[in-house]
Image 1 (spheres, chains in turn cyan, yellow):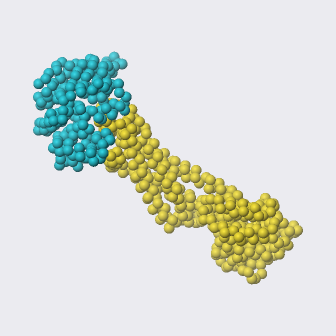
Image 2 (cartoon, chains in turn red, brown):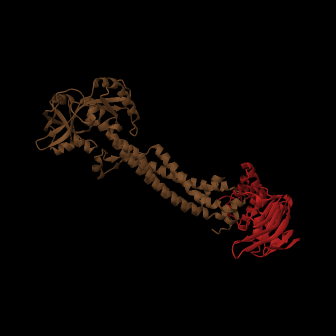
Image 3 (cartoon, chains in turn purple, blue):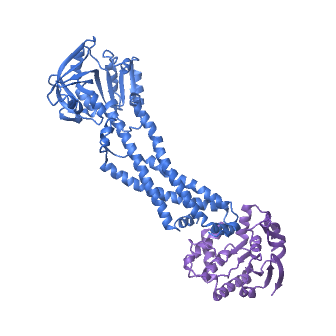
Length: 227
Length: 410
Protein backbone atom coordinates (compact mmCIF):
# COMPACT_ATOMS: atom_id res chain seq x y z
CA UNK A 1 0.00 0.00 0.00
CA UNK A 2 1.56 3.22 -1.12
CA UNK A 3 1.09 6.64 -2.63
CA UNK A 4 2.85 7.19 -5.93
CA UNK A 5 2.95 10.42 -7.86
CA UNK A 6 4.19 10.48 -11.43
CA UNK A 7 5.14 13.69 -13.21
CA UNK A 8 2.72 15.49 -10.91
CA UNK A 9 2.21 19.12 -11.83
CA UNK A 10 -0.06 21.88 -10.61
CA UNK A 11 -0.19 25.23 -12.33
CA UNK A 12 -2.47 28.04 -11.25
CA UNK A 13 -3.63 30.73 -13.71
CA UNK A 14 -2.66 28.34 -16.47
CA UNK A 15 -4.35 30.25 -19.26
CA UNK A 16 -2.95 33.62 -18.31
CA UNK A 17 0.32 35.38 -19.04
CA UNK A 18 1.44 34.77 -15.48
CA UNK A 19 1.00 31.08 -14.65
CA UNK A 20 2.05 30.01 -11.17
CA UNK A 21 3.75 26.61 -11.05
CA UNK A 22 2.94 25.35 -7.55
CA UNK A 23 4.22 21.79 -8.11
CA UNK A 24 6.54 20.87 -10.95
CA UNK A 25 6.90 17.37 -12.41
CA UNK A 26 6.99 15.54 -9.09
CA UNK A 27 7.75 11.85 -8.83
CA UNK A 28 7.26 10.61 -5.28
CA UNK A 29 6.62 7.35 -3.50
CA UNK A 30 5.33 7.10 0.09
CA UNK A 31 4.89 3.67 1.65
CA UNK A 32 2.29 2.55 4.19
CA UNK A 33 3.36 3.27 7.77
CA UNK A 34 5.70 6.15 7.02
CA UNK A 35 5.86 9.29 9.18
CA UNK A 36 6.75 11.94 6.64
CA UNK A 37 7.32 15.65 6.97
CA UNK A 38 7.10 17.81 3.85
CA UNK A 39 8.95 20.99 4.64
CA UNK A 40 9.71 24.16 2.84
CA UNK A 41 9.10 27.87 2.96
CA UNK A 42 5.67 29.40 2.55
CA UNK A 43 4.45 29.22 -1.05
CA UNK A 44 6.77 26.34 -1.89
CA UNK A 45 3.85 24.06 -2.83
CA UNK A 46 3.60 21.86 0.30
CA UNK A 47 -0.12 22.36 0.83
CA UNK A 48 -0.85 21.96 -2.88
CA UNK A 49 1.03 18.65 -2.86
CA UNK A 50 -0.92 17.42 0.17
CA UNK A 51 -4.21 18.51 -1.38
CA UNK A 52 -3.46 16.61 -4.58
CA UNK A 53 -2.33 13.40 -2.92
CA UNK A 54 -5.28 13.72 -0.54
CA UNK A 55 -7.63 13.95 -3.52
CA UNK A 56 -9.13 17.33 -2.69
CA UNK A 57 -7.38 19.12 -5.55
CA UNK A 58 -6.92 18.07 -9.14
CA UNK A 59 -3.44 18.12 -10.69
CA UNK A 60 -2.82 19.99 -13.94
CA UNK A 61 -0.87 16.97 -15.17
CA UNK A 62 0.49 13.66 -13.92
CA UNK A 63 -1.07 11.00 -11.74
CA UNK A 64 -1.60 10.18 -8.08
CA UNK A 65 -1.93 6.44 -7.58
CA UNK A 66 -2.97 5.13 -4.18
CA UNK A 67 -3.03 1.34 -3.79
CA UNK A 68 -3.12 0.98 -7.54
CA UNK A 69 -6.01 3.41 -8.01
CA UNK A 70 -5.40 6.56 -10.03
CA UNK A 71 -7.46 8.91 -7.89
CA UNK A 72 -7.26 11.65 -10.52
CA UNK A 73 -9.41 9.55 -12.82
CA UNK A 74 -12.13 8.97 -10.23
CA UNK A 75 -15.48 10.68 -10.68
CA UNK A 76 -16.56 13.24 -8.08
CA UNK A 77 -18.73 10.94 -5.93
CA UNK A 78 -16.25 8.05 -6.14
CA UNK A 79 -13.42 10.36 -5.13
CA UNK A 80 -15.36 11.64 -2.11
CA UNK A 81 -16.07 8.03 -1.07
CA UNK A 82 -12.39 7.15 -1.57
CA UNK A 83 -11.29 10.04 0.63
CA UNK A 84 -13.89 9.17 3.26
CA UNK A 85 -12.65 5.59 3.55
CA UNK A 86 -8.90 5.99 3.03
CA UNK A 87 -7.68 9.45 3.90
CA UNK A 88 -7.91 11.49 7.07
CA UNK A 89 -7.26 15.21 7.18
CA UNK A 90 -5.89 17.44 9.90
CA UNK A 91 -5.98 21.16 9.16
CA UNK A 92 -3.96 24.01 10.55
CA UNK A 93 -7.10 25.74 11.88
CA UNK A 94 -8.57 22.42 13.18
CA UNK A 95 -11.76 22.93 11.07
CA UNK A 96 -14.06 21.25 13.56
CA UNK A 97 -17.80 21.77 13.26
CA UNK A 98 -18.42 24.46 15.87
CA UNK A 99 -21.97 23.35 16.64
CA UNK A 100 -21.05 19.75 17.44
CA UNK A 101 -19.36 18.52 20.61
CA UNK A 102 -15.93 16.86 20.51
CA UNK A 103 -17.63 13.47 20.60
CA UNK A 104 -20.12 14.36 17.85
CA UNK A 105 -17.35 15.76 15.64
CA UNK A 106 -15.58 12.42 15.77
CA UNK A 107 -18.76 10.37 15.41
CA UNK A 108 -19.92 12.40 12.45
CA UNK A 109 -17.22 11.24 10.01
CA UNK A 110 -17.85 7.61 10.96
CA UNK A 111 -21.56 8.05 10.37
CA UNK A 112 -20.71 9.22 6.86
CA UNK A 113 -19.27 5.73 6.35
CA UNK A 114 -22.57 4.20 7.43
CA UNK A 115 -21.47 2.72 10.77
CA UNK A 116 -24.13 2.15 13.40
CA UNK A 117 -24.67 4.75 16.07
CA UNK A 118 -23.33 2.39 18.74
CA UNK A 119 -20.15 1.61 16.78
CA UNK A 120 -19.56 5.31 16.13
CA UNK A 121 -20.07 6.17 19.79
CA UNK A 122 -17.73 3.45 21.07
CA UNK A 123 -14.91 4.19 18.63
CA UNK A 124 -15.22 7.96 19.06
CA UNK A 125 -14.97 7.63 22.85
CA UNK A 126 -11.98 5.27 22.51
CA UNK A 127 -10.19 7.67 20.15
CA UNK A 128 -10.88 10.71 22.30
CA UNK A 129 -9.59 8.79 25.32
CA UNK A 130 -6.52 7.88 23.29
CA UNK A 131 -5.80 11.55 22.56
CA UNK A 132 -6.37 12.42 26.21
CA UNK A 133 -9.75 14.06 25.91
CA UNK A 134 -11.88 11.46 27.70
CA UNK A 135 -13.13 14.12 30.08
CA UNK A 136 -13.95 16.68 27.39
CA UNK A 137 -16.32 14.62 25.26
CA UNK A 138 -19.31 16.88 25.47
CA UNK A 139 -17.63 20.22 25.05
CA UNK A 140 -18.07 22.19 21.86
CA UNK A 141 -14.83 23.31 20.14
CA UNK A 142 -15.03 26.90 21.36
CA UNK A 143 -14.82 25.60 24.93
CA UNK A 144 -11.57 23.74 24.20
CA UNK A 145 -8.03 25.09 23.92
CA UNK A 146 -6.21 25.11 20.56
CA UNK A 147 -4.23 22.03 21.53
CA UNK A 148 -7.37 20.19 22.61
CA UNK A 149 -9.15 21.14 19.40
CA UNK A 150 -6.26 19.82 17.34
CA UNK A 151 -6.43 16.57 19.29
CA UNK A 152 -10.12 16.30 18.48
CA UNK A 153 -9.14 16.90 14.84
CA UNK A 154 -6.64 14.03 15.10
CA UNK A 155 -9.32 11.75 16.57
CA UNK A 156 -11.69 12.82 13.79
CA UNK A 157 -9.06 12.11 11.13
CA UNK A 158 -8.47 8.65 12.57
CA UNK A 159 -12.11 7.76 13.22
CA UNK A 160 -12.85 6.24 9.79
CA UNK A 161 -9.67 4.10 10.13
CA UNK A 162 -7.88 5.75 7.20
CA UNK A 163 -4.63 4.38 5.83
CA UNK A 164 -3.20 7.85 5.24
CA UNK A 165 -3.49 11.02 7.27
CA UNK A 166 -2.65 14.35 5.64
CA UNK A 167 -1.81 17.01 8.19
CA UNK A 168 -1.41 20.53 6.87
CA UNK A 169 0.76 22.43 9.34
CA UNK A 170 -1.00 20.84 12.31
CA UNK A 171 1.15 22.52 14.93
CA UNK A 172 1.22 26.00 13.45
CA UNK A 173 -1.21 27.38 16.03
CA UNK A 174 -0.02 25.37 19.00
CA UNK A 175 2.38 26.14 21.83
CA UNK A 176 5.41 23.97 22.54
CA UNK A 177 3.68 21.75 25.10
CA UNK A 178 0.64 21.12 22.93
CA UNK A 179 2.86 20.46 19.92
CA UNK A 180 4.89 17.87 21.84
CA UNK A 181 1.72 16.16 23.13
CA UNK A 182 0.16 16.08 19.67
CA UNK A 183 3.29 14.68 18.08
CA UNK A 184 3.48 12.00 20.80
CA UNK A 185 -0.09 10.97 20.03
CA UNK A 186 0.46 10.84 16.28
CA UNK A 187 3.71 8.99 16.61
CA UNK A 188 2.06 6.39 18.88
CA UNK A 189 -0.77 5.88 16.42
CA UNK A 190 1.70 5.57 13.58
CA UNK A 191 3.71 2.97 15.45
CA UNK A 192 0.79 1.00 16.92
CA UNK A 193 -1.69 1.07 14.05
CA UNK A 194 0.60 1.62 11.09
CA UNK A 195 -1.27 4.71 9.93
CA UNK A 196 0.74 6.74 7.45
CA UNK A 197 1.16 10.40 8.46
CA UNK A 198 2.21 13.05 5.95
CA UNK A 199 2.76 16.53 7.38
CA UNK A 200 3.36 19.77 5.63
CA UNK A 201 5.33 21.93 8.03
CA UNK A 202 8.15 24.31 8.60
CA UNK A 203 8.11 23.67 12.32
CA UNK A 204 11.53 22.29 13.33
CA UNK A 205 9.88 20.42 16.26
CA UNK A 206 7.85 18.38 13.81
CA UNK A 207 10.72 17.89 11.39
CA UNK A 208 12.85 16.60 14.25
CA UNK A 209 10.29 13.87 15.01
CA UNK A 210 9.65 12.81 11.37
CA UNK A 211 11.36 9.68 10.10
CA UNK A 212 11.43 10.93 6.54
CA UNK A 213 11.78 14.56 5.48
CA UNK A 214 10.94 15.82 2.02
CA UNK A 215 12.18 19.30 1.29
CA UNK A 216 10.24 21.33 -1.17
CA UNK A 217 11.27 24.55 -2.80
CA UNK A 218 9.57 26.47 -5.53
CA UNK A 219 7.37 23.49 -6.40
CA UNK A 220 10.25 21.09 -6.70
CA UNK A 221 11.58 18.34 -4.50
CA UNK A 222 15.06 19.40 -3.46
CA UNK A 223 15.77 16.85 -0.77
CA UNK A 224 14.31 13.52 0.39
CA UNK A 225 16.02 12.06 3.44
CA UNK A 226 15.34 9.39 6.01
CA UNK A 227 16.28 10.31 9.62
CA UNK B 1 -27.08 13.50 12.78
CA UNK B 2 -27.78 15.61 9.68
CA UNK B 3 -31.01 16.97 11.17
CA UNK B 4 -29.31 17.63 14.49
CA UNK B 5 -26.50 19.44 12.68
CA UNK B 6 -29.00 21.41 10.58
CA UNK B 7 -30.97 22.48 13.64
CA UNK B 8 -27.85 23.62 15.48
CA UNK B 9 -26.57 25.43 12.38
CA UNK B 10 -29.87 27.27 12.22
CA UNK B 11 -29.28 28.65 15.70
CA UNK B 12 -25.65 29.61 15.18
CA UNK B 13 -26.69 33.19 14.64
CA UNK B 14 -29.56 33.43 17.10
CA UNK B 15 -30.36 37.06 16.37
CA UNK B 16 -30.56 36.56 12.62
CA UNK B 17 -32.71 33.44 12.91
CA UNK B 18 -34.97 35.07 15.50
CA UNK B 19 -35.49 38.12 13.28
CA UNK B 20 -36.37 35.92 10.32
CA UNK B 21 -38.74 33.78 12.39
CA UNK B 22 -40.41 36.89 13.81
CA UNK B 23 -40.86 38.29 10.31
CA UNK B 24 -42.41 35.00 9.19
CA UNK B 25 -44.65 34.76 12.25
CA UNK B 26 -45.93 38.34 12.07
CA UNK B 27 -46.37 38.11 8.32
CA UNK B 28 -48.37 34.91 8.70
CA UNK B 29 -50.52 36.40 11.45
CA UNK B 30 -51.35 39.25 9.06
CA UNK B 31 -52.08 36.96 6.12
CA UNK B 32 -54.12 34.42 8.10
CA UNK B 33 -56.16 37.14 9.82
CA UNK B 34 -56.81 38.80 6.47
CA UNK B 35 -57.84 35.46 4.92
CA UNK B 36 -60.05 34.82 7.97
CA UNK B 37 -61.61 38.28 7.63
CA UNK B 38 -62.34 37.73 3.92
CA UNK B 39 -63.71 34.22 4.58
CA UNK B 40 -65.81 35.58 7.44
CA UNK B 41 -67.19 38.40 5.33
CA UNK B 42 -67.99 36.26 2.30
CA UNK B 43 -69.27 33.40 4.46
CA UNK B 44 -71.50 35.81 6.33
CA UNK B 45 -72.78 37.28 3.08
CA UNK B 46 -73.58 33.80 1.75
CA UNK B 47 -75.15 32.61 5.02
CA UNK B 48 -77.33 35.69 5.17
CA UNK B 49 -78.33 35.36 1.54
CA UNK B 50 -79.35 31.72 2.11
CA UNK B 51 -81.11 32.53 5.37
CA UNK B 52 -83.00 35.57 4.18
CA UNK B 53 -83.32 35.42 0.47
CA UNK B 54 -82.71 32.26 -1.44
CA UNK B 55 -83.03 29.39 1.05
CA UNK B 56 -81.29 26.32 -0.44
CA UNK B 57 -83.69 25.51 -3.25
CA UNK B 58 -86.49 27.49 -4.85
CA UNK B 59 -89.31 26.41 -7.16
CA UNK B 60 -91.04 28.84 -9.52
CA UNK B 61 -93.03 28.71 -12.69
CA UNK B 62 -90.44 28.85 -15.48
CA UNK B 63 -91.91 32.05 -16.87
CA UNK B 64 -91.95 33.74 -13.47
CA UNK B 65 -88.15 33.62 -13.22
CA UNK B 66 -87.72 35.95 -16.20
CA UNK B 67 -90.96 37.85 -15.95
CA UNK B 68 -92.65 37.84 -12.54
CA UNK B 69 -96.26 37.98 -13.81
CA UNK B 70 -98.93 37.39 -11.21
CA UNK B 71 -100.58 34.66 -13.30
CA UNK B 72 -97.41 32.56 -13.52
CA UNK B 73 -97.98 30.41 -10.46
CA UNK B 74 -96.27 27.09 -9.77
CA UNK B 75 -97.89 24.09 -11.45
CA UNK B 76 -99.18 21.52 -8.94
CA UNK B 77 -97.46 22.96 -5.84
CA UNK B 78 -99.26 20.51 -3.56
CA UNK B 79 -97.44 17.60 -5.28
CA UNK B 80 -94.10 19.25 -4.56
CA UNK B 81 -94.89 19.99 -0.92
CA UNK B 82 -96.16 16.45 -0.41
CA UNK B 83 -92.81 15.11 -1.62
CA UNK B 84 -90.81 17.65 0.37
CA UNK B 85 -92.50 16.32 3.49
CA UNK B 86 -90.95 12.91 2.75
CA UNK B 87 -87.37 14.13 2.18
CA UNK B 88 -85.12 13.73 5.22
CA UNK B 89 -82.75 16.52 4.06
CA UNK B 90 -85.55 19.08 4.11
CA UNK B 91 -86.01 21.05 7.32
CA UNK B 92 -88.86 23.31 6.19
CA UNK B 93 -90.41 25.02 3.18
CA UNK B 94 -92.49 28.09 2.61
CA UNK B 95 -95.01 28.80 -0.16
CA UNK B 96 -95.04 32.43 -1.19
CA UNK B 97 -97.42 34.50 -3.24
CA UNK B 98 -95.30 37.30 -4.62
CA UNK B 99 -96.29 40.46 -6.43
CA UNK B 100 -94.52 43.69 -7.23
CA UNK B 101 -96.53 46.72 -6.23
CA UNK B 102 -96.62 49.95 -4.29
CA UNK B 103 -96.92 50.70 -0.62
CA UNK B 104 -98.12 54.15 0.25
CA UNK B 105 -98.48 56.04 3.50
CA UNK B 106 -99.96 59.44 4.05
CA UNK B 107 -96.47 60.90 3.51
CA UNK B 108 -94.97 58.93 0.64
CA UNK B 109 -95.02 55.80 -1.45
CA UNK B 110 -92.50 53.20 -2.59
CA UNK B 111 -92.24 50.34 -5.03
CA UNK B 112 -91.77 47.07 -3.16
CA UNK B 113 -91.99 43.32 -3.53
CA UNK B 114 -95.02 42.18 -1.58
CA UNK B 115 -94.41 38.75 -0.07
CA UNK B 116 -97.58 36.89 0.76
CA UNK B 117 -96.52 34.17 3.16
CA UNK B 118 -97.93 31.44 5.38
CA UNK B 119 -97.07 32.79 8.79
CA UNK B 120 -95.69 29.69 10.49
CA UNK B 121 -94.04 28.18 7.42
CA UNK B 122 -92.16 31.41 6.65
CA UNK B 123 -91.00 31.67 10.24
CA UNK B 124 -89.48 28.20 9.94
CA UNK B 125 -87.66 28.92 6.67
CA UNK B 126 -86.30 32.42 7.34
CA UNK B 127 -85.41 34.21 10.57
CA UNK B 128 -87.92 36.96 9.70
CA UNK B 129 -90.20 36.32 12.66
CA UNK B 130 -87.30 36.70 15.11
CA UNK B 131 -85.93 39.80 13.43
CA UNK B 132 -88.96 41.92 14.08
CA UNK B 133 -87.58 44.81 16.10
CA UNK B 134 -90.89 46.44 16.96
CA UNK B 135 -94.36 44.96 17.20
CA UNK B 136 -94.78 41.35 16.22
CA UNK B 137 -94.62 38.99 13.27
CA UNK B 138 -97.77 38.65 11.16
CA UNK B 139 -100.66 37.59 13.38
CA UNK B 140 -103.09 34.93 12.22
CA UNK B 141 -106.00 37.02 13.48
CA UNK B 142 -106.94 40.57 12.54
CA UNK B 143 -107.57 42.36 9.30
CA UNK B 144 -104.74 42.97 6.81
CA UNK B 145 -101.59 43.12 8.93
CA UNK B 146 -98.32 44.03 7.22
CA UNK B 147 -94.73 43.80 8.40
CA UNK B 148 -92.37 46.39 6.94
CA UNK B 149 -88.66 46.98 7.34
CA UNK B 150 -87.34 49.71 9.58
CA UNK B 151 -85.91 51.37 6.49
CA UNK B 152 -89.31 51.43 4.75
CA UNK B 153 -90.91 52.60 7.98
CA UNK B 154 -88.42 55.43 8.14
CA UNK B 155 -88.96 56.46 4.53
CA UNK B 156 -92.74 56.31 4.73
CA UNK B 157 -92.73 57.71 8.29
CA UNK B 158 -94.56 54.67 9.61
CA UNK B 159 -94.89 53.36 13.13
CA UNK B 160 -96.71 50.43 14.64
CA UNK B 161 -100.39 50.62 13.85
CA UNK B 162 -99.88 53.06 10.95
CA UNK B 163 -102.10 52.51 7.97
CA UNK B 164 -100.63 51.89 4.51
CA UNK B 165 -102.24 51.21 1.18
CA UNK B 166 -100.87 48.40 -0.91
CA UNK B 167 -101.65 48.41 -4.62
CA UNK B 168 -100.66 46.11 -7.50
CA UNK B 169 -102.02 44.73 -10.76
CA UNK B 170 -104.28 41.76 -10.19
CA UNK B 171 -104.77 38.67 -12.33
CA UNK B 172 -106.96 40.63 -14.75
CA UNK B 173 -104.33 43.40 -15.04
CA UNK B 174 -106.56 45.74 -13.10
CA UNK B 175 -105.08 47.79 -10.33
CA UNK B 176 -106.22 46.51 -6.98
CA UNK B 177 -105.47 47.77 -3.56
CA UNK B 178 -106.30 47.54 0.10
CA UNK B 179 -105.45 49.18 3.37
CA UNK B 180 -103.10 47.36 5.76
CA UNK B 181 -101.91 48.16 9.27
CA UNK B 182 -98.30 47.89 10.33
CA UNK B 183 -98.11 45.08 12.86
CA UNK B 184 -94.35 44.76 12.96
CA UNK B 185 -91.13 46.39 11.83
CA UNK B 186 -88.20 44.15 10.90
CA UNK B 187 -84.56 44.65 10.15
CA UNK B 188 -82.24 42.20 8.35
CA UNK B 189 -78.48 42.39 7.72
CA UNK B 190 -79.13 43.41 4.10
CA UNK B 191 -80.20 47.02 3.67
CA UNK B 192 -81.05 46.40 0.02
CA UNK B 193 -83.35 43.50 1.00
CA UNK B 194 -84.99 45.66 3.65
CA UNK B 195 -85.48 48.42 1.14
CA UNK B 196 -87.49 46.27 -1.25
CA UNK B 197 -89.59 43.77 0.72
CA UNK B 198 -92.71 43.80 2.83
CA UNK B 199 -94.65 40.82 4.27
CA UNK B 200 -98.37 40.15 4.35
CA UNK B 201 -100.45 37.01 4.80
CA UNK B 202 -100.67 34.89 1.65
CA UNK B 203 -104.42 34.52 2.05
CA UNK B 204 -104.89 38.32 2.12
CA UNK B 205 -102.83 38.78 -1.02
CA UNK B 206 -104.50 35.95 -2.93
CA UNK B 207 -107.91 37.43 -2.10
CA UNK B 208 -106.83 40.79 -3.50
CA UNK B 209 -105.23 39.23 -6.59
CA UNK B 210 -108.20 37.12 -7.43
CA UNK B 211 -106.20 33.95 -7.97
CA UNK B 212 -104.86 31.24 -5.72
CA UNK B 213 -101.55 29.39 -5.70
CA UNK B 214 -97.87 30.10 -5.06
CA UNK B 215 -95.21 31.88 -7.05
CA UNK B 216 -92.37 30.53 -5.03
CA UNK B 217 -91.61 27.57 -2.79
CA UNK B 218 -88.47 28.17 -0.74
CA UNK B 219 -86.89 25.02 0.69
CA UNK B 220 -84.53 25.02 3.67
CA UNK B 221 -82.18 22.05 3.98
CA UNK B 222 -80.22 20.52 6.82
CA UNK B 223 -76.93 21.82 5.38
CA UNK B 224 -74.40 23.77 7.44
CA UNK B 225 -71.78 23.98 4.69
CA UNK B 226 -72.44 27.30 3.06
CA UNK B 227 -69.42 26.95 0.75
CA UNK B 228 -70.93 24.00 -1.12
CA UNK B 229 -74.22 23.53 -2.85
CA UNK B 230 -73.86 19.75 -3.23
CA UNK B 231 -76.83 18.87 -1.02
CA UNK B 232 -78.91 21.62 -2.63
CA UNK B 233 -78.14 20.17 -6.07
CA UNK B 234 -79.19 16.71 -4.91
CA UNK B 235 -82.53 17.94 -3.54
CA UNK B 236 -83.03 20.19 -6.57
CA UNK B 237 -82.65 17.18 -8.85
CA UNK B 238 -85.05 15.12 -6.73
CA UNK B 239 -87.68 17.84 -7.00
CA UNK B 240 -87.10 18.17 -10.73
CA UNK B 241 -87.94 14.48 -11.12
CA UNK B 242 -91.34 14.83 -9.51
CA UNK B 243 -92.44 18.24 -10.71
CA UNK B 244 -93.89 19.49 -13.96
CA UNK B 245 -91.53 20.64 -16.71
CA UNK B 246 -93.28 24.00 -16.57
CA UNK B 247 -91.73 24.61 -13.18
CA UNK B 248 -88.20 25.79 -12.62
CA UNK B 249 -86.23 24.28 -9.72
CA UNK B 250 -82.98 26.04 -8.86
CA UNK B 251 -80.39 25.72 -6.11
CA UNK B 252 -79.14 28.81 -4.30
CA UNK B 253 -76.09 29.27 -6.51
CA UNK B 254 -78.33 29.32 -9.57
CA UNK B 255 -80.69 31.78 -7.96
CA UNK B 256 -77.88 34.15 -7.03
CA UNK B 257 -74.94 33.47 -9.37
CA UNK B 258 -73.06 36.23 -7.57
CA UNK B 259 -72.77 33.92 -4.55
CA UNK B 260 -71.26 31.23 -6.74
CA UNK B 261 -68.76 33.70 -8.16
CA UNK B 262 -67.88 34.90 -4.64
CA UNK B 263 -67.13 31.33 -3.62
CA UNK B 264 -65.18 30.75 -6.84
CA UNK B 265 -62.99 33.80 -6.35
CA UNK B 266 -62.36 33.27 -2.62
CA UNK B 267 -59.72 30.61 -3.34
CA UNK B 268 -57.76 32.67 -5.89
CA UNK B 269 -57.95 35.87 -3.83
CA UNK B 270 -56.66 34.05 -0.75
CA UNK B 271 -53.96 32.45 -2.91
CA UNK B 272 -52.91 35.91 -4.17
CA UNK B 273 -52.67 37.20 -0.59
CA UNK B 274 -50.61 34.18 0.41
CA UNK B 275 -48.56 34.43 -2.79
CA UNK B 276 -47.54 38.02 -2.04
CA UNK B 277 -46.54 37.05 1.48
CA UNK B 278 -44.55 33.95 0.56
CA UNK B 279 -42.78 35.77 -2.28
CA UNK B 280 -41.58 38.44 0.14
CA UNK B 281 -40.73 35.76 2.68
CA UNK B 282 -38.97 33.69 0.00
CA UNK B 283 -36.61 36.55 -0.85
CA UNK B 284 -35.91 36.98 2.86
CA UNK B 285 -35.10 33.31 3.22
CA UNK B 286 -32.86 33.36 0.12
CA UNK B 287 -31.00 36.28 1.66
CA UNK B 288 -30.64 34.54 5.02
CA UNK B 289 -29.56 31.28 3.42
CA UNK B 290 -27.06 33.01 1.12
CA UNK B 291 -25.47 34.69 4.13
CA UNK B 292 -25.63 31.57 6.24
CA UNK B 293 -24.24 29.27 3.55
CA UNK B 294 -21.59 31.55 2.08
CA UNK B 295 -20.13 32.44 5.47
CA UNK B 296 -19.62 28.69 5.95
CA UNK B 297 -18.15 27.95 2.52
CA UNK B 298 -14.89 26.77 4.05
CA UNK B 299 -16.78 24.51 6.43
CA UNK B 300 -18.66 22.90 3.55
CA UNK B 301 -15.31 22.41 1.84
CA UNK B 302 -14.01 20.63 4.93
CA UNK B 303 -17.16 18.46 5.06
CA UNK B 304 -16.61 17.42 1.45
CA UNK B 305 -12.91 16.86 2.11
CA UNK B 306 -13.61 14.47 5.00
CA UNK B 307 -15.96 12.47 2.81
CA UNK B 308 -19.41 13.99 2.98
CA UNK B 309 -21.14 13.22 -0.30
CA UNK B 310 -22.51 16.21 -2.18
CA UNK B 311 -26.07 15.01 -1.89
CA UNK B 312 -25.65 15.01 1.87
CA UNK B 313 -24.27 18.55 1.81
CA UNK B 314 -27.30 19.47 -0.28
CA UNK B 315 -29.59 17.68 2.17
CA UNK B 316 -27.97 19.51 5.08
CA UNK B 317 -28.72 22.90 3.52
CA UNK B 318 -32.27 21.83 2.64
CA UNK B 319 -32.83 20.53 6.18
CA UNK B 320 -31.67 23.88 7.58
CA UNK B 321 -34.11 25.86 5.48
CA UNK B 322 -36.89 23.31 6.00
CA UNK B 323 -36.46 23.59 9.74
CA UNK B 324 -36.55 27.37 9.38
CA UNK B 325 -39.76 27.06 7.38
CA UNK B 326 -41.36 24.53 9.73
CA UNK B 327 -40.46 26.59 12.81
CA UNK B 328 -41.58 29.88 11.25
CA UNK B 329 -44.79 28.43 9.87
CA UNK B 330 -45.61 26.70 13.17
CA UNK B 331 -44.97 29.86 15.17
CA UNK B 332 -46.96 31.97 12.74
CA UNK B 333 -49.88 29.59 12.41
CA UNK B 334 -50.17 28.85 16.14
CA UNK B 335 -50.20 32.61 16.85
CA UNK B 336 -52.69 33.13 14.03
CA UNK B 337 -54.90 30.33 15.34
CA UNK B 338 -54.93 31.93 18.79
CA UNK B 339 -55.79 35.34 17.34
CA UNK B 340 -58.52 33.97 15.06
CA UNK B 341 -60.01 32.01 18.00
CA UNK B 342 -60.04 35.20 20.06
CA UNK B 343 -61.64 37.19 17.24
CA UNK B 344 -64.25 34.47 16.85
CA UNK B 345 -65.31 35.27 20.41
CA UNK B 346 -65.02 39.05 20.30
CA UNK B 347 -65.85 39.57 16.61
CA UNK B 348 -64.56 42.42 14.47
CA UNK B 349 -66.92 45.40 14.57
CA UNK B 350 -67.11 46.90 11.09
CA UNK B 351 -67.77 50.42 12.37
CA UNK B 352 -68.25 52.88 9.54
CA UNK B 353 -67.92 50.14 6.92
CA UNK B 354 -71.03 48.39 8.25
CA UNK B 355 -73.42 50.74 6.44
CA UNK B 356 -71.83 50.15 3.04
CA UNK B 357 -71.36 46.41 3.49
CA UNK B 358 -74.96 46.12 4.73
CA UNK B 359 -76.08 46.59 1.13
CA UNK B 360 -74.38 43.24 0.39
CA UNK B 361 -76.00 41.50 3.33
CA UNK B 362 -73.01 41.60 5.67
CA UNK B 363 -73.57 41.79 9.44
CA UNK B 364 -72.20 44.72 11.43
CA UNK B 365 -69.77 42.42 13.28
CA UNK B 366 -67.63 39.89 11.45
CA UNK B 367 -66.22 36.64 12.78
CA UNK B 368 -63.08 35.49 10.93
CA UNK B 369 -63.10 31.92 9.68
CA UNK B 370 -60.04 29.90 8.70
CA UNK B 371 -60.53 26.25 7.78
CA UNK B 372 -58.10 23.55 8.94
CA UNK B 373 -57.38 22.84 5.27
CA UNK B 374 -56.29 26.45 4.81
CA UNK B 375 -53.87 26.20 7.74
CA UNK B 376 -52.46 23.02 6.17
CA UNK B 377 -52.19 24.69 2.76
CA UNK B 378 -50.40 27.73 4.21
CA UNK B 379 -48.02 25.51 6.21
CA UNK B 380 -47.08 23.44 3.19
CA UNK B 381 -46.68 26.53 0.99
CA UNK B 382 -44.39 28.27 3.49
CA UNK B 383 -42.18 25.20 3.96
CA UNK B 384 -42.07 24.56 0.23
CA UNK B 385 -41.05 28.15 -0.52
CA UNK B 386 -38.33 27.92 2.12
CA UNK B 387 -36.98 24.76 0.49
CA UNK B 388 -37.07 26.40 -2.95
CA UNK B 389 -35.28 29.44 -1.53
CA UNK B 390 -32.37 27.22 -0.47
CA UNK B 391 -31.82 25.71 -3.91
CA UNK B 392 -29.72 28.58 -5.24
CA UNK B 393 -27.32 28.84 -2.28
CA UNK B 394 -27.05 25.04 -2.17
CA UNK B 395 -26.25 24.88 -5.86
CA UNK B 396 -23.56 27.54 -5.48
CA UNK B 397 -21.85 25.48 -2.77
CA UNK B 398 -22.13 22.19 -4.64
CA UNK B 399 -20.45 23.70 -7.69
CA UNK B 400 -17.28 24.19 -5.67
CA UNK B 401 -14.47 21.68 -5.29
CA UNK B 402 -13.41 21.09 -1.66
CA UNK B 403 -10.08 22.84 -2.14
CA UNK B 404 -11.72 25.95 -3.61
CA UNK B 405 -14.37 26.02 -0.91
CA UNK B 406 -11.71 25.65 1.76
CA UNK B 407 -9.76 28.53 0.26
CA UNK B 408 -12.70 30.91 0.90
CA UNK B 409 -11.89 33.43 3.58
CA UNK B 410 -15.48 34.08 4.81
